[in-house]
Image (cartoon, rainbow, N blue to C red; front, top):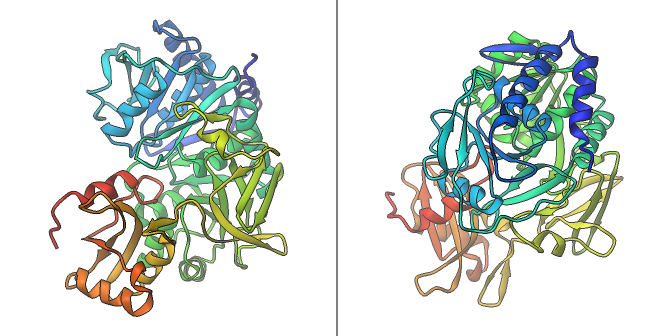
Length: 479
């Protein structure tokens, strides 16, 4: 089947040749130079002997110009890029390598990839500071890719084993085209992106979408502190800021007095953004935060063009969204095809009309989506269904609590139990938290397992890490 993305990218790189395409702290590439670099790297990839057609290439690195070069090169080489979250640890990475049958891995030299690579391959600098390694062979049979799959991305599985979503080139292109239309992205936009390009927030809003219009994409290395954000915004005269809620919270706490003069739009997604943070951010900076709702499996779904109101906005072009009693169902032009490494699971979430059941609950008010909870994360304890979001919300109101996550776990007898991990200030105890919950909730909703920590472990998009939360329950409590 004829690939879609190489043709699209060839066209935009040629059409916007003289404009700045992508920058990071170490340099920049214009569109014409990006094309040259990507083609050279693609030629190098094509010379490596691999065992599959098309080749399967994992990208495991933080945002950089070189990451963008490697992504485009993989597509130009006729290979399929597998975009792994740089926050994945050795466990998740080894599962990806085995489950998906990777041939090569492009990674930072410092990445811990010892368990999955067999040799480091030589190059002539086509990939900059990144390293290309051959992935070792596993005895597990490799699942077959769909004929039209051009990109694979990951979403967290319930056990910490990432599910690999296959996307056609048509779906990836549609996500970018519809984002451009729905958000009025122009060639004059300069996007400061602090979300990992492996995640849907950045992948759908800040990569191909920017290139379609000839906009410029500005990336940051390292931990995205408030001061680093300000420096990047000032140095690039950015017009758009793309980040997760945790970063906006950090900016509000630092209360910067400058840095946002050119920014017209801030975009948030991936986790709930508190109204108080949104309002205070706009008060401090004069920049409205536009909420965006998307699901990894379906791409971008809604956008709040009116940042002054509540909710997550109206459906983007190409999106059909139904908010019903049993949850939100969506059908989009940017929909994934299936999970490569979890046969049948994706298909179980589709109905006869092709709508994907998101697991979210919500309602449409005057066409604007408002989320109210989840349907698929209910905890069943003793035959009673408990919404963990409700429990976490109650815990967050306790004195000294900074954040909380509730979920289902097993007690010492191997039975389902309600567990909670709570980030709290010194002096807070499990006993005081249980008493707080008991004053507001029925007894069966009081967590039977409580673990106190300094900070909730999270992945690169700011969401709690399921795998690390479960590990915490098996380690001694230091509080």
